[in-house]
Image 1 (cartoon, rainbow, N blue to C red):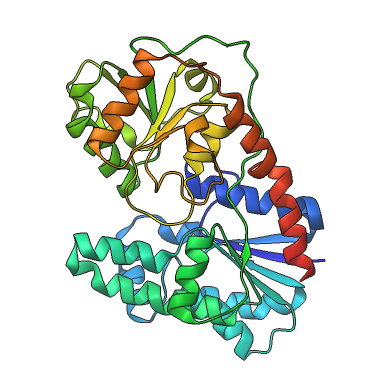
Image 2 (cartoon, helix red, strand yellow):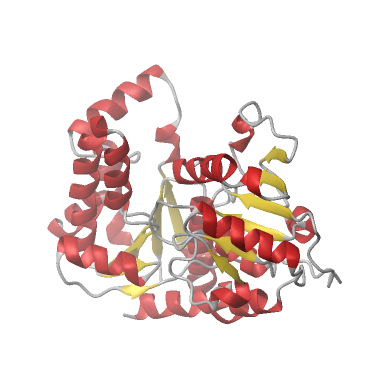
Length: 359
């Protein structure tokens, strides 16, 4: 089986949730089909900033292309695709690819992986910035085409599946939850959470992450006695914005195992977005207590009272954190670790990839 893998991310990068998802997808297909049978079309080069590239992207938007796609890339894909049994499109914003492959009577299978419902994210952004309505229309058009013209649709959770079917009509959908390769380093740490717990926030400088942690600092931090650590690609930009001595901003850390093991809790005050939050999977893999919003846990099958607490208001967060301060729990959460192994490990989703290639 030969597979053409199309992505706007380098398959070897793992600094953000999106990169981890792309890397997982590529590695899974490599294991099933053999690395030698997968070729990559990497559109990330088209995202590099220069005056010339910015002008090209601007005009491609008006032509209905987004996320690095253009006429040149489309022609290249249409020319090379017939040599492959599967075209795997790692993202839902490339409607032109799926649509034109079908029109050209491509005989193989087109598989789309929906990292998120991108049109939903664009709509959320439009509500904050009405001037971005044009981007919502562009994403909606492309996502509709990928949904209608693909053979297999991989979606991370039931919410996204329902939203897609509501917007674009009924099509078969295969649920492919977020998963991570197990790089947990077992540390003999059965210590109880401390009276001044270390609460760790993990996330890149993606708008819902930035908005979420700013909300937490503004509304919750003064009412709880904690140490707050912030880790994530691009988050170093927040260093000059928080003056509270209880806050420590690290930015990107290549190996977060040590800082994760020392944290008493993971906090995840995320109120917007789509898909599933990879940071939640990472926390489960490391056996952490998690205090997060409903959005942070979206798509995860968990007993929230065992994993930590669900909080959707400042009062909820304050009450939950103060309760854990008053009643310490084990810093290593066996339940979180077991749920990762059962439902969100690399081996679990590898079986779903095998099913997708057979369908």
